[in-house]
Length: 192
Image (cartoon, rainbow, N blue to C red; front, side):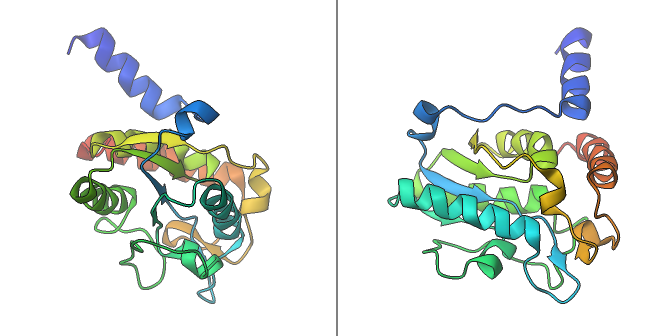
């Protein structure tokens, strides 16, 4: 890869925050639905971001009932009645660590997808997390078709939210700062 392409990729991974959603025509080609999560509340409940993502998941399930759903564990906390194929879980408290993070979740989802011959996935992801999630899904061999998400970032936040294990990241600006630092880490680790 030449230097210009490397710089363009690195710049895009770090600073591209406006990831376009897939078109309806593209979404119709999906093999499965995958989700990330947006942190739990201090009391262990789903939190408002996960409630929003569970509603979006339900909307896509109703539109495409034949697609298997592979959510991160917080989405079933918000909507336990969806017919989940496999729940991707591994965090006792909903916090990200070096062992349990976007890359680990996408890797588990990719493993299950590959075992079943699924490649294209409708990805339901918090808006500020979409750039990193899309890059990670591509890195693990999936074709992410980004679901349109409600754009009001404050609706995903709450003072008792514990995203990434850091109490107090309840504003879009604080979450964006965390996300930028995670993108740098993920680039360094080769996870995106």
